[in-house]
Length: 239
Length: 372
Image 1 (cartoon, rainbow over the protein chains, first blue to last red):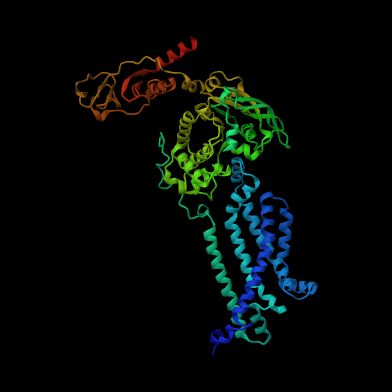
Image 2: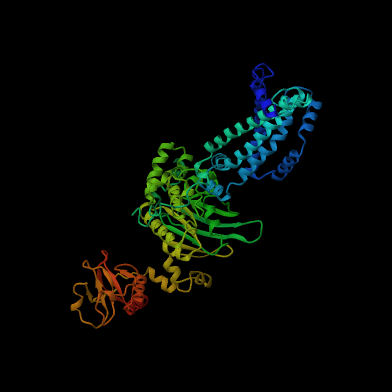
């Protein structure tokens, strides 16, 4: 019996689908840590990214700190927080937040900063306040880039959350840790598959959100200018 | 809407200027003044054009009216009130603003773009859209375009939408910053004529910035020529600018053929017409063979010229512009100069041949007008 058949049997075993160590429970834990991490990271990164993108202030400092943070080793950071703060839910979440803020911040900041300056000038000229410029012009136009950054961040969190299993918090990472500990390639492989499938499904959902949330006016698939409308603005059309 | 109304001229305002620049200067940290001691009064209900080479401060001056730029010194008054005493956003919503790049919001449909300022003023979405639909028609666009996005429009259509958006809150003042300079010459000429037509109906106070002196003389009631260094060189109606430039800078800027272009402002109302020898295809054979002969259709509209000695319709030479009776001497002279027979074809308002104009005659008349 090869590995794939064994993994198939593993998934077919009803014991895997119930109880506190079953797939649904592990999946629930995994999603909960993911959501918690994302919420905290977004609460920090999105307003900060909006502020920096809109005002251009603090750009250099934040960009350099963010790229320095990206270089931190995940497991090392997790261990550090647990040593400093003890066991429990929040220390590993903080570690994950620190790793998630940079991509979210970069996505938000670069999305806002990439909005055409002439467009912003026009928006101010029409009489929008700075807040209205941000909410009604910059955010909707930055959305494609922002959501792209968000998708990348979400995928990163889903795969990185697996490390919290090291400190006994469960999640789908449990299968990886246990599989490694007892040299059980079937469990290891099954855990990897679960995390990958979860990531794919979430990414699919986010891509649909992106399709729905981004204005059709911003999609590159728009027909080229003026086609089929040549006569509409012809001289004397309104005379 | 309340802001728009608060700036609207009171009924008794008469002919007091709508916008006044008083000793206005603008300089940036990096040396050269952008605008130097500008004193200017902009007439109510007229089109005032700021024209000049790049870097002359014309756009900066325009943007000081709606506080997109703050003057370093001096005061800008709109309807007698210092603009710096009014909140910038509300002041801007009380004026229409049209930009070169159209500045349409790419994520909003055409209708929602037009509705922008009314929406900012608190008008309901439904009301604002109804108004936007009316404005599409006003600027000569089909209602079907309302649901499109800016990226789906041609450059000329985008500029029309930009004008409609500027008109949406019915502001008394329109600020237009090189609005037609990014479109091709044919569309530009269309948009200029359309603007003049709109202005006849709306009678807004329009401040229009361009670097194109021809555009300035075509659309301006008054033209302010700015020189490098932000100096106002001359402020006059276009015909005066062409006839009597105050200095070498203005003379050079309005161009070498300004004498010819100033004919645009000379009326050819009383220009004497010469009788035209005309024939239709049916009567052609019976005409004498000498001289040029003008063929018309049965309704009297010109079709082409037959050279001397040739009397078959196939030999007709077309070309030559037409002079509509009552238009300018420039058109009369152009008709004469461009005609294959040397005589320009004058047509009445219905497009029927009314007579011929002679280049010598046009010049004599012009001469007589200048002397007397």
